[in-house]
Amino acid sequence: MKVLGAGVGRTGTLSLKAALERLGFGPCFHGRHVLDHPDRLPLWLAAAQGRPVDWSAVLAGYASSVDWPGAAFWRPLLAAFPTAKVILTVRDAEGWYDSVDRTIYRMFGYGPVDGRVTEARDVVPGLDEFTAFHRRMIWDGFFAGRFGDRAAAIRAYEAHNAAVRHEVPAGRLLVIPPGAGWEPLCAFLGVPVPDEPYPHLNDPDRFWARVAARVSESRG
Image (cartoon, rainbow, N blue to C red; front, top):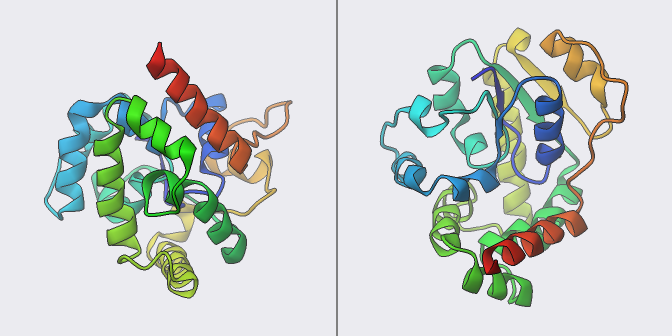
């Protein structure tokens, strides 16, 4: 692993994934790839239970990682890959909460009934297990069952970001706010700046479009 993303979901992680792969640091593991490796789900579940796992096996075949579930295990990942650089994607807490509430909390958490979610859970293989894992790791774990409490969820988010900033050595950490573009990322990784716009893939409409695409693919 060359790059570890410590930023939680809905902080520009999918855009960062595309950027890292464009810069030669791929394949990049993203939360949605858990479904692509059902044989590794027991390893993720073991990690969620606090048991030691072989992180090289969990992330085999990938050169970088962003988003949950990796972001929830940033401390053991830092220890497992001591030469990897760390990137923390951040955004304003209020906007972050609203984005999570409209997307992944509905899809993989305890959000309101949504026909798109019901259809996906009925059709996409493994999605029930994937959802159960996310509930245990993110909603019941990271947020201690309190994501529905906006203030409590924002405190958890800000505490996570503060811990990453405090514990990761400065020379190993890059913090990326919205709109940072290619320059700080490329300088941090020591690669040329591409002559193309930085990817922007994380808006809610695109999230639900990806869900619809997965449903369509599963229907065959």
